Length: 388
Image (cartoon, rainbow, N blue to C red):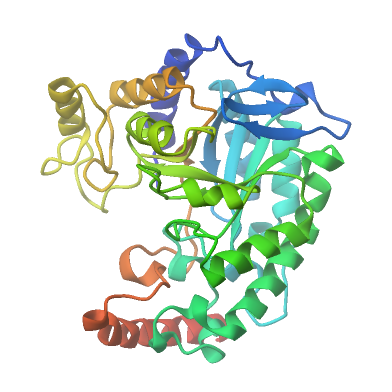
């Protein structure tokens, strides 16, 4: 998770760079529309709030990782750094640690309180429901008990019927909690997301059809992000049949993705859900750790004129490189850009994870069985911890 002091330096520099390019769009904040229902619309050139073209600059702050007594201060710092939006995931395993026993009142689960604090700070909200979130969170946010009703050893559990019922149950219950905070109700939420990094949104894929129908049924009157998708050539063209969905980029070099998108899907606004600083391993040197620290990030930018391509290659990015990446993005006409993360916060218990243990899609047949066995052993251990 990000260091707040270093992170603020990065965001101030990047915000100054982007501010020089605020010509085609205003930068409205929630304070400008507070108190009455308002509209959020996408067009090929960007995003409009109540008809006003608006640039959304965002930072990730996860309510389940930010203690309640620090949320107000962190959100105020985010706003002071020139951002007008906060982005967060929903955490299924926090809200439903046991089947049908929902928690939205305990300190780490109180998403309504977090959304109210964001509104009080004058911030819009991008709400990524998932409920698979990856998010460097144990099992990608899916509660461990899911394996009591689904056989994860069969590979992709999204293809198993009971998954859809459990997913719908949580999504609808979570949506009921956040519905008062939607733009149509005068609240700060302007973007939503179902699923996460699930490849192209092909309308012919049954699971994509299911997710889209679920989004339609919620009646949010908001765009839904579909992140982590490549839009080169005609990669996003089939998504035109899914008008609620808009492709979004996760990575370091948003401008290069924008060039591909303009060629392959020119009628979409440019959305960047994760401008990634990610994390560096515990005990490593953030400045120059074997070619992945700040020094190598800056050297690459000077040598190539482009930002570092991968968050796992350059976990700690030079502030100048980040500012350069944001400036290129805004110059390309970017409509939404989110720093992942703005504030890392704290983990509790066994909630931190990365790598295999936060994936739930099927793997290659040659590795599926041993990976599934390992996953089941770990998840059984986590289930014991949860129920102890």
